[in-house]
Image (cartoon, rainbow, N blue to C red; front, side):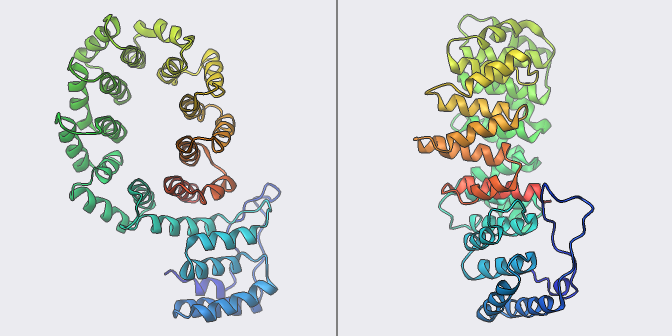
Length: 391
């Protein structure tokens, strides 16, 4: 447990408070001697393991200094120690009381505690556990990194893929081996990990998939897009992309991926096909074309994606469109995802929460709400985003 007795005893200025009304030059006042003394006693009791005495001091402080962020911090630590991070979040919400102010570094403490709980080996949600470990690892937590490495070495594909995505070359090498085996399950997810890694090791297995006429269409499409993302425009790959684009028996998703890859390499051969698909009566094909053209969001592209955000009865398409729109119009994407949080379908609600936390939300009030999600993965994503925004 980290204890900040000296900091409080000296009466240093409060942690950063965010408000639209405050100016950057305004300096918060130092705390009083009386508050500082009580806080010191409370932190000392907590450090000694006497949570009951610490809580008694806290009640006195809350009665006298109900809006003090120093009192809030002590309360959060006591709540985490006694009842867990969600109880600390309850205390934070009571302190907040609907004001425009936030205490970012207090929320950071709660987020780290939530991630610590999610990262425990007994967590029934393995996806949330891995996401929590990745978020803590990104925040410099060496213990979390060691857990990822140990789990990957023990044969866990989730941790191995997570390490590969973070550029761990040993993990990338292992993923390359797995992708090359015919019996490997979830190759699509592993391909995405290789692309995300940005490693030079990723090119050969993706090239092999692209060149193999026996591969499943979704794998060939992922390989084509992945090679474009990695910038691997060898003459053999370019020839294969042209062949896939021209072949009458190429599935539509492969043609679109090949056209998009060629466009990324400056080859306009498939541009007209992509523009046609942007006007397709099939929502999924419009979405695929928009994904291929996302690096150049023209007026037509924006109009099509905005329409997909409202595509009735197509929650999956709306989710994909929101992910595309997020870098272009964050507020529009956010409004769509917040609407989908109330969808009748549980899977849609959960995916909307994950996208909102991971890719869209940049404000602490939204993330604070998502920290309470019933979906462990949404909760972990939101907590990781809080850490990212408060570094």
